[in-house]
Image 1: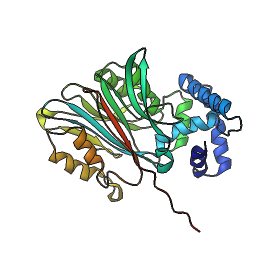
Image 2: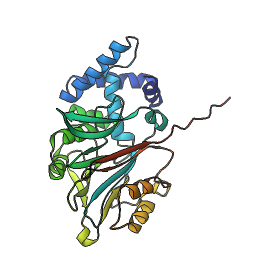
Image 3: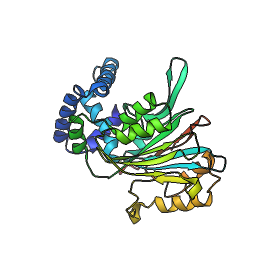
Image 4: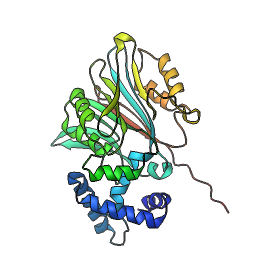
Length: 307
């Protein structure tokens, strides 16, 4: 609770914050399964600690944060053996707090493993996940600064959060093509990049999403020399800013490993500066075809306290 209280406090004026939480509390009651699950989590927290200040409104707002705050790097790569490997760094402003509340889950349907994911406590959606024998998925934030207010308004219109749509894809889609179609069509509260990897040759794509339509797709095509697709937080038709150019060094390193990439090589790339940076919460490598899923949470950096 103390971790998220610090997040909420840092977002701005407490009076404005309380208004936003009140709006989010109302939204919980009109957003179907997503809102109902958040209300259930809030009730359980309150049962454990009746003195808590966490309510459904604050948890709803927490789930909107990713739609406007995060920075990431995602890669999907194939090789001469036709394997598909997927890796990602997740970077976020509240780095130390989130490192401390990051955990891995395994979701089962009956006795069958449905998918594996790396999650944040209190968040109901999925940012990074792999469904063995089917597909893997990561989300990168798009268009920094579009703002939580527009996300809230989009939620009122009944659109899905980016991460909830990803979770439903993991639960309901059986293969790469089904997941791709789902994420091309769903209406979202915020723009984003969906990065998908499959299990068959050239099953890899970056979907550049607007709220209600698709801006672009970038696909693996080894026959035409496209062995990797990667995305940071900038559209393909834009140059990344000099102060946040993770894209150029990442592409250079990927070019050295064309046709031979695997999870270990992708993880090594992700652990290279500036792709790995002070805001990196965790790094994940996954392969839906082979069933591997590995996340490294980076160490919490102790901040200096002024005397």
